[in-house]
Image 1 (tube, rainbow, N blue to C red):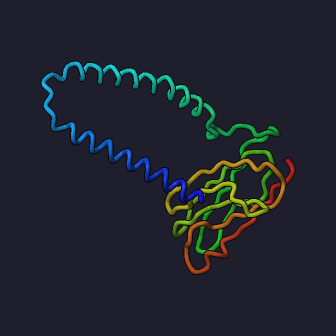
Image 2: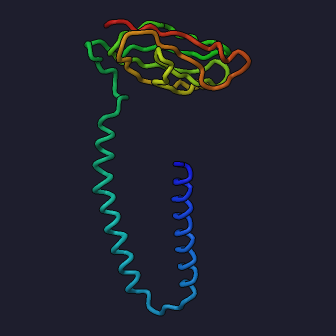
Image 3: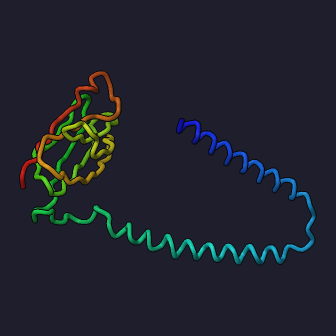
Length: 177
């Protein structure tokens, strides 16, 4: 039902766009001797639109940039620093330098691969994906995540990497701070 509605709306909008193109094409063959008034209006409209975009999107850009989580190693909720886990993907296993972190404190995963591309996906106890990045040979991706609650989380490979891909599972224990 919803697919039919979306298809109908899309077809209608495409039809309107086609009519607009046909109208412009038909009018493009008419000769107009004086473009100066039209050009002046177009430049005025362009200037107004430019400043509207600057004043609406500029503050939005500044607001989103101030909230980035990728600053220096700031203290977590309980006063500790950022916990770092070095993660290396191998065919067909994950190698983590530690598997226990504190809840409520930021964790920075430094993810790379020793062989082929892997998908580094962190899943909660209900196997819902909560964070992800790529593991690529010769490059280290940094993924920051704060585990909100204690428990056991799983890291699974999200990109088919070979025959035993399904065995690329490692667990991370999240404990009280």
